[in-house]
Structure formats: structure tokens, C-alpha cells
Image (cartoon, rainbow, N blue to C red):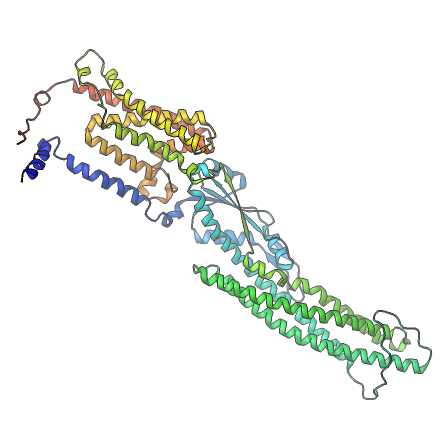
Length: 581
């Protein structure tokens, strides 16, 4: 019972009208701090469409030459990707030139830049017809605009690359279909030509088998009917063998055509699923397409061997006919035409065998490269500006628990109110500055902070510490203990709205609207500049704002102390509390 009475007596201290709301404020302050920070971090990815980012499209369209019966194909991958970005609106895209995008990135108006370089479509076109390096997209970021904006940009770049891959896969699927359709037509033409040459005549009798001839070696001229008969018999045997090879070639070509159709369908499924959010499905379809491409590639080797064999046999047949009289010249010319078709088919294999690199292209048809301006290099170095500024604020809050905001005896003396205010601020400002600078020196010495401008960083942190101490000091004199709670709440709001972690545009609308007017915003940007690099204008802006804030806080403190020199009965006779039992 005595314990409860002692506790109740302690609460009696707040019966005074000026103090009765203090317990409620002390309880509300930590709740407000946590809620302010929690709301700012609540699903920032849902508001990324408000974050500005630049897109530079330097690409120009190109045209693939006509292939067989297919018309020329226009490839404009850069414009297609630009249309995709405009349609998705995942960020607040600014489509501009390279120089303007670089200016916006350096001054913090955009958080990253995506560059579609000149020749992007040409690389896409070359990758469709021959094994070459894939087209490259470039991402440019700036850690001086916020360390966490770079991981966000990298994540978005992965999505942009998937969109570009969808475009390239669509071109690839159409190109494979066209090339293999042309190859199939050539193989069918070969078969028809061979059948026309080897069709048996009713009046011909099967000749005896002569000695084989060497391919590509011209035979001696024919001087007798017997030699003519032997040469024709050998030519007939060679033509029959060539016909058999062409039939096998036609069968293998049909098999390969079926396999390519399957590869094309798999490639199209992979392209269609690239827009899907189901990454497992996308990877499965890409793997299936890659497997089909490798199977088709094995068929390419078989058909290449058969075409080479048919070419050798055609050369042998031509050598058999080289010594025939003028009456067989027509057959010789037809065989030369057949040989030309063989060579055309052989040349078509590398074009159709984008297959040789299809499995690679389906896995990674587009690559990316990243360039970071003013790199933070490590997470600690990237978040160090926030930590150093918070050091000053936390030191001021703790020091106010032990330091008097002013000397009461000075109010009755001959000192001016401004002098009294400055004397009360000086110990707090000195302690806050010393703690902040010590923290910086430790980070620089033992954590290899490696600031780009160490002396300027020291000066900026000292000025920030003085401004922080002056603000906390003024609130303490104005509201007492409630002023300390209000300072903590204001500090939490400034941290949440300044873009300390995420771009302020990804915060709720109130945070984003007040961001340009908060002293913490300017101080944070200036400290990032002195540590990792950036435009010097941010440092001078922050210095002016902090100096003005310090003067305003000190002036407000002096006005409050001057008013306290006017005594009233209330101040002369404080409330009498009951005796503690």
C-alpha cells in the first residue's frame, strides 16, 4: 500500500496546469517517432512511379537483307524498348539526350539513367545471323544522390533487360523461322533436281560396273565407243549414289525442319513469358528453348556431312562427264547447276544456325553494364552521412538531460538576454560538436571512411552540430521537457522525409512535399558530397541554411529569456506539493 501511495505522490507533480499534459506527451513522443519512420518505409516500391529517371535512346533502325522469298526485315529494337518503358511507367521516365541526362544525374534531378547506345539494333541484327557479342544496355547511377538509389536502379535495370530480351527473342524467333524455311526450300529444290537427272530412261540397259573415278580429277578424252560406254556406266552409278545421298539429305532435312519448328515455338514461349512475373516459368521456357536449339544443332552436323558428301559425288560425276562429246554438254551444265545449289545450301547453314549460338542467345540475348558516379563502394560509407548527422542530434538530446539551458542567476544580472542565451548554448554546442567530430575521426581512421574532402567535411559537421544544438536548446527553453520530445519527433520526420534511405519521391506525399524545405535534406546532400563526391553547390547551400538556422534559434532563445525577466506572482510563488508521507 505504501508503494502505491509513493507512486501516486510522484504523479501529483503533474497536477499543475502547465504540467498536466507532460505524461501524455512523453508517451506520445516515442509512438510518433516510430510511426513516422514506419510510415516512410512502408512499401516504398509501390511509389517508385514517382521517382524520376532518365532514358537516352541513341539507337537507329537497321534492316536485315531479304532472305529467299522473305522481304527485308526492319529491326528497331531501341524504339521498341522505349515504347515498352512508356507503357509500363514503372518510374517517372524522362526521355532526353545524353548530355541533358548527365546533367540531371549529377545535380540529383534524376536518380539513374538508362542508355540505349548507338548501334543497338545493328548488334541485335548481327546476333540474329552470326555468332557475335550481344547488344549492351548501359546504366548510370550516382551515389551522391543516395546510396540506396543504386540498388533500386540495378533492380529496375534487370526488368528493363527482360523487356529488351523479349524484343530480341521475338526478332530471333521470326529470323529462325525465315532462315530455316529458306533452307528447307533449297533442300527440296536439290531433291527435285537430282531426281530429274537420275530418272531412268526406258531404252537404257544397265551397264557393267567400271572402275571408280577420283572426284575433281578430269578423265582423259574418249577415243572409242567402248570408253564412252564405260564412262556412261560410271556416271550412271555415280548419279544413283548421288540420288541416294540426296534422299537421305531430304529425310534429315525434314527431321531438322521439325526440330527447328520446335525450337522456334520454344523460343516464342520464352519470349512471351519474359513479360510474366513468374520467373520460374520464364526460366523453364528458356531452358526448353535452349535444349531444343542444341538438338537442332546436332542435326546441323549430320546434314552438313551429307551435303559435303553430295558435293564430292557431284564433283566425281562432273569429272566422269568431262570427256564426253558435245551431245552430253547439256547434262554437264545441269550437274554444274546442281553443284551450285549444293554450295548455296552449305552457305545457308551458318545463317540458319543462329542455332550455333541460339542456346546462348536465348539465355542472355542482351547484357548490361553499370557506371556509378561518386561510388560509395561499401554500405557503411554510403550510410555514413546519415550516421554522422544523427550523432549531433542524439548528443544534443542526451546532453540536455544534464546541462541547464541557461543560468537562472544570469537573468537577474546586468547581462543582456542574447549573452545569457549564448552562454547557455555554448556548453551544449561544444559537447555536440566534439562528439560529432570525434565520431568522424574514428570512422576516417579505423573504418577507412576516406572522405573526398576531409577538412570540408569537418567544417560542415561542426556547423551542423552547432545548428542542431541551437535548435534543441531553443525548444528546451520554449517548452521544457515537451520541447525535447518535440525535437525527437521533428528529427524522426526529417530523417524519414530527407531521402536518407530511399528517394523522397517514394515516400508518402506529405514527406515528399516537405522534403525540399527541410534542413536535414540539405545537410545530408552536402555531407554525401564531401565524403563521396558531387557538386560543390550543395555544400554552400547547406552551409548558408545551417548558419541561418543557428542565428534564428539563438535569436528565439534570447527573446524567450528576455520575457522571463518579467516576474509574475506565478513565477515568484511556485505550486506547493503535498508532503511525502
